[in-house]
Image (cartoon, rainbow, N blue to C red; front, side):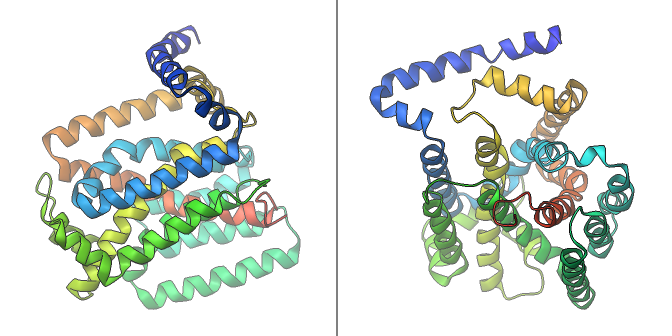
Length: 338
């Protein structure tokens, strides 16, 4: 632990810079420090505006660099808040019945196998038989759609899982006020804009889809995110995915952590690292840090292959989010499912 404490002290300059910035803000800073609802709503709104602007200016850059920079940390957040936080890692049957299919999807199995894990979680949920039967019926319906859609189901799931994160954040804890509806309304409005012809027209005005990075151009993203549809609709789907993926990362790396902690005031950067190590253990944090460094170095030499490597590593995580969401709802851990 002495090594961890020493590493945490490396973050002291960031804490010093933040204290200086807060002093410069003066009286404006206090409400943001003590009022979590206000702080989270403001930060979330700024993130939506920033992500929308970046999508309309540099979507191909954001799609290429986002997974490299934020991908591994957001996988760690998945593990922390969806597995360790609720205590699911202490339920061996869940590891076997739900965990094995999720791991299989990470090794290349298709979406239907991942749904077996979701169904297993529903069976083992600590909930009434009625709730579990309703969940199993919904999962069976989803499995039928997957069977009909074929490979397009994976594409649809890739798009939809970004919205799962936003829904989880909205439902994560009781809120005294309705300030969170502002960023949610902005998110909905931005999503509608980017999937509309107007969003594509704005992107064309800025030549946004012409600025590729590392050989990753718009044709690559169309083949990955919108195969088999018209070019016009495909480009709009690429813009929408770029935006929702950025918000997906923002939820897991900032918004949900702020909402999850017991303290209403934000911790120091040093305290945040120490809390992370306490929750997950230093080996997990060290491995995650090593993986982030590996992907960064890999991307410096071959950005496209680094992206492929990350997506192979992270393929399981959408199924993990869906499985955990099923458990959280059935067991009444979300504010609207109690």
